[in-house]
Image (cartoon, rainbow, N blue to C red; front, side, top):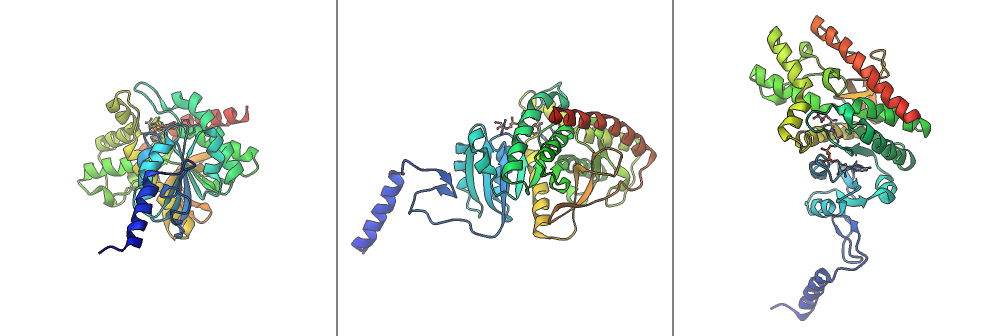
Length: 357
Ligand SMILES: NC(=O)c1ccc[n+]([C@@H]2O[C@H](COP(=O)([O-])OP(=O)(O)OC[C@H]3O[C@@H](n4cnc5c(N)ncnc54)[C@H](O)[C@@H]3O)[C@@H](O)[C@H]2O)c1
Ligand SMILES: O=C(O)C[C@H](O)C(=O)O
């Protein structure tokens, strides 16, 4: 028979559920009820903020990061819908404590103390648009968010997803320089989706499991600036001219392929969230001090005459610790590199002048 003390405890628990306090706040893995919710988390791990967390990329990205054992605290920031996304995600029985932040006035709280900030905030493409067509809206969004980072977590690693990446990364660099906190090792434009696509499409052609394939993709993240180095694929293999042309074009136009298939409903979100998490996980393993963490990213670079360029980089405790050279290119890739550099130079310059205005 249940004792009266235990019945009273049960009634108290049920009553607490039926009468939540009015000052409830989205925090932890529950709506915090003072004195009724044990402190959660506390497990060792990194603090990660996602800016644009309620969006097409943001939501699956948040879900996957909540599953990442390297994350102890996950901050969700957006200008809309964060309470709902936070409530939903916070019910997942994984370690990370989730907190939601809504609107500009909560940006600083969202950023304070973060180790890694991932930015998928901004508008996506519709059919017929280039990534550069997003510049007018997204440049301002990225600038404001980076000003917040400068102030609240100047030492955080920043993973920038918002397009056009070829311009938004230079904008972020200028904002950080202006604030006197710029460390080029900590600012990374996310080009991982190009690598993910390249691995998939090359594996299809070779009849391999994509997990066995590694394709370096260099340059930038738009059209001809996306330069897959098919001569450096692992495992070593060769392609006919027709295969090289097909693969290069498919990888360069992967984003457009999705934009057209979505027919006005946005651009890649699910594969991007997957790629973003793969990349963020690599950054966190680097921060933890793991050896040999190497991925492609669009970073401040001296590999070419351009101030930013995507290549393979080694990630460590300070962010980008080593930038690898391009390696031997074949004639097709050398021609591609020249085209890529021409477009990249303009996009980088556009970002820099915007931020210096
Ligand atoms: N780097 C890449 O490989 C890659 C891949 C896919 C998409 N993208 C880019 O990512 C961006 C987001 O794409 P999406 O499909 O998630 O778009 P989306 O419209 O679905 O979501 C964007 C989110 O950003 C939020 N947002 C807008 N202004 C904000 C601000 N000032 N602060 C915080 N959040 C703000 C919106 O409220 C929205 O929730 C686009 O620019 C897209 O082009 C990049
Ligand atoms: O193509 C887009 O606009 C989104 C993204 O950059 C992508 O490559 O899927």
